[in-house]
Length: 125
Image (cartoon, rainbow, N blue to C red; front, side, top):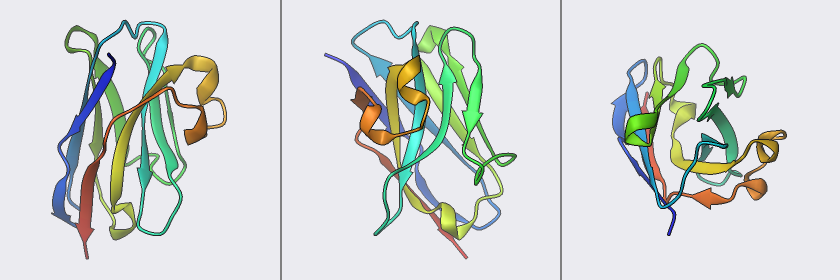
């Protein structure tokens, strides 16, 4: 069965950095895109970033461009999210997701096929 397991969340001060990891197993993801969503308290889940397993092409939400970097290690079946210059408004549960490329067009969480359970990142001011 497919599993996406996130790790790397924690508490950091504003301006600091965190690196999230998502280890994928249970199927071949070579034709898929992998990515990250986040959900802050009282808010809807929102798209953060995604990457193509095959080409490595990336896309980011405007709110994180220039601060976050998504990458992947195909040999380890792992996707990373390097988060720099963190702000208190980045505080959220971060979820790893996987789906075919066409499902990422609008960045809608409802279109994702697989989800991890999430990891909490808290940024203090």
